[in-house]
Amino acid sequence: MRFILSIIAILIVFVSYSSNGQKIFIDPGHGYSANGGNPDGRTQTEIHTALATGLKLKALVDNDCSWQSLMSRTTNIGGWVTIGTRQNMSDSWGADYFISIHCNAGGGTGTETFWCNQSSSPNGAANINFAEGIQSSMAAGGQWFDRRVVEEHGFLGYHFGVLTTNQAYSCLSEIGFVDTPGDAAKLNSNSWRDAFAQAYIDALETHIGTTCTSSCPGNLNLPSNALSGTYISGNTITSTGQVQNGSNCVLDASSAVNLDPGFDAVPGSTLDAKIGGCQ
Image (cartoon, rainbow, N blue to C red; front, side, top):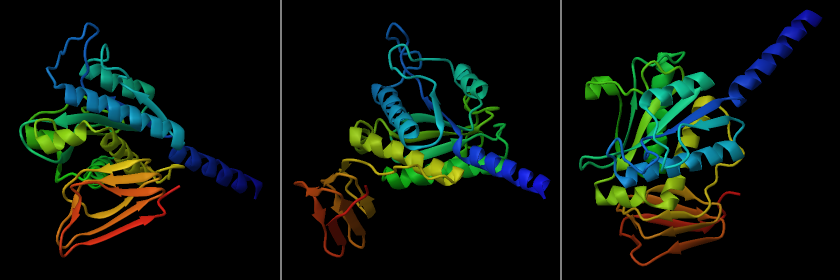
């Protein structure tokens, strides 16, 4: 009986570690060289948004979750590292999850997520599920048009170097489009970058099966012209958006709901603004 109980105890400890001791590798794409050069020729919006969102994600992981985090770069100037180095950093560290953060271009709109069929993650189906979870969470939390979640080689005809043979559950997230005005305004917004980071946390929580101690955003700014669903804040909600015909919108803040000039709830919509929020 003692032998059996000992095995059970060991299993409990192992399960606890496997769910709570996860390693999250955060890869803000691109960056500038030490002399300020732009080796990849990317826009400032992409380089700065990727890093800002990555740093916010790291802060949430470190402060609210029982996981570990590591970033491929923590600065813009002098932060550029090669694609191979990024993947090697993750694999050498023994990351469980790898999120590469990017912004799109080409005149489209919305968010999309890519996974790689050459990834060496422990379970291919789970790897795809992770990418699908990131996409779903970003589309909802960032209020983006849901473009697609696809295998990159099958769609683009080539593999992303940070994903090939990656040992972690891995995906590349294209948050929004830098050259579409509506998307770019959100990408450059500090409050929306908070929402993007929280969306990654929400997806990680779902996939890992562990809830972090705090998943409550502070001040929430909603400039979108298509508000729908429930928005919860630990402080204030400010909005200039619109609730469209047939949409139901709940704004639930802890201290104040501010409907600034330009906000509208059109006929046929439902709006509920209340104080309660999350703590």
